Length: 218
Image (cartoon, rainbow, N blue to C red; front, side):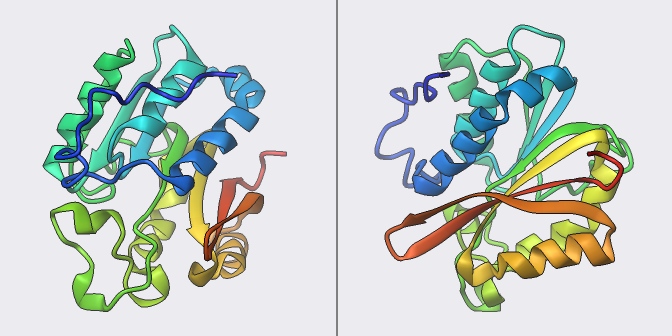
């Protein structure tokens, strides 16, 4: 088992500006660890985490992949999160982490077209008003708009263009996001394989990890 990344360099004031890892983060970490053998067999060269926050998820993924030529890109609309992501990578002696200050994947296509081997997203999933979506600060980490789906639904049409032929997308959702609906959208609208591979209750929330791939992957 790969240890959870060391975040001891982060202080209380940092968590006032970036999302502090919680049960949803750890469920995503568990999904990556569960697929460790698959990830190693893939020999990923190009990984991308959307909304990296503290950098915990990408740092663990880099630890799984090991000392290879892989590059780990991250994006976050919050510039402070980009700074913290880099600091977390350095703290854990992880190289080749490249934070990009942008919303979702804005500005990355077509350059990243069909090149992402591992895509991860712990999205802003909390049900809020539409007006709360799109903040440049820490609110961007949780405000998801109607059904908590507004940011998620903005990304879904881009997944097929982002993933490499062998690429895998790990997406965290909660019950209010209607995960079965997302599965059907990915299957029927975008003709991709989509399955719920993990689920866990965290307090009042029921959290899910969806795994999405091109349909010709077994």
